[in-house]
Image (cartoon, rainbow, N blue to C red):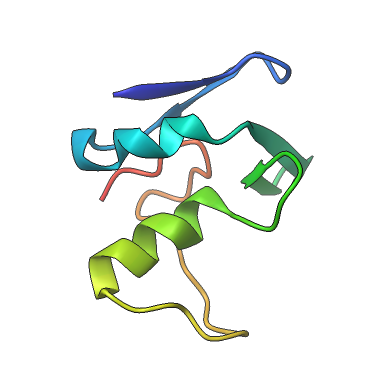
Length: 77
């Protein structure tokens, strides 16, 4: 499934189980190669929110999440 980022003219790939995260107003933050999808007016990062769901616990500060294929626009599990 895809989450559209209209202001950035980009699309993020997510699994169907995580599509409910579409309710947030996501935007792109940073520049290649340090590009992230963040909630526009908050502190949520899409890849971290998805990893917290997978682990069943909040991530601690400093705990890193790597993208499986290296693309920050591909947040599939």
